[in-house]
Amino acid sequence: MTQEDADRLAGWLEGLGLAGTLAEAGLPTFTRDADGHAVWTEPDRLEDLESVLRSVGEDPEHAVPVGLVVLARQARLRTELLATPWFTYETLGELRGTSTEATRFAVHKAAQTHRLLVVPVEDGVVVPAFQLTPDGEVRPDVAPLLEPLLAARMDPWRLWVWLTQPAALTFGRAPEQAVTDPELADLVRHAAVRLAEHVGRR
Image (cartoon, rainbow, N blue to C red; front, side, top):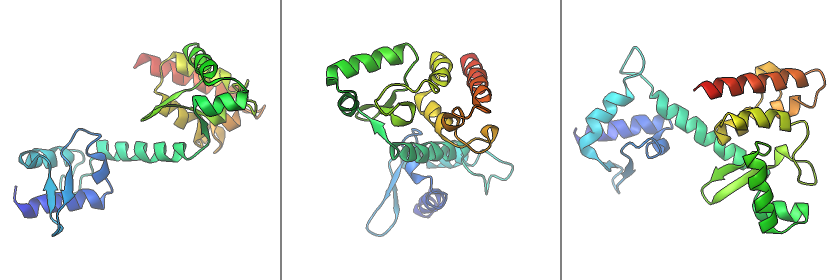
């Protein structure tokens, strides 16, 4: 593949906003040199890479690499979720008035019994705040949503998204909000159980 082709491929991915997802997908990545040319980590793989990226869709010329789109969306959602309130062991311990070690033990126990969503991040774990009461305990109305989905081993990030993003099922409200509505609570709890069944079959 020529330098012109390498630049074209890089420009295509940049135009789709997907250049930053290559590494996470285990694909060759690139940087730009002083002249603006794409410098790929594995230039000998570029022809195969382009074939794979354009393999989805009826028109290979304009195909969009769906896998990278999914990764980009996941990365965006994770960034948005981490911008919402969450706790570490230390900050949750401060809220509860307990030591960091006692909090760590309590969090692990609650997570093991499917009563608390704990999400892995680069530096450890975080406890999303939406599921907690003002004194740091699990909300009684959210617990019935957490238990079946955590027991089904749903990915923690996917669960965080499902609980906190608006859904058509709940008339544009997030499930963790809709469960507080007496008219929607049963519907949300049923949806959590059905989703858990689906996750468990995968």
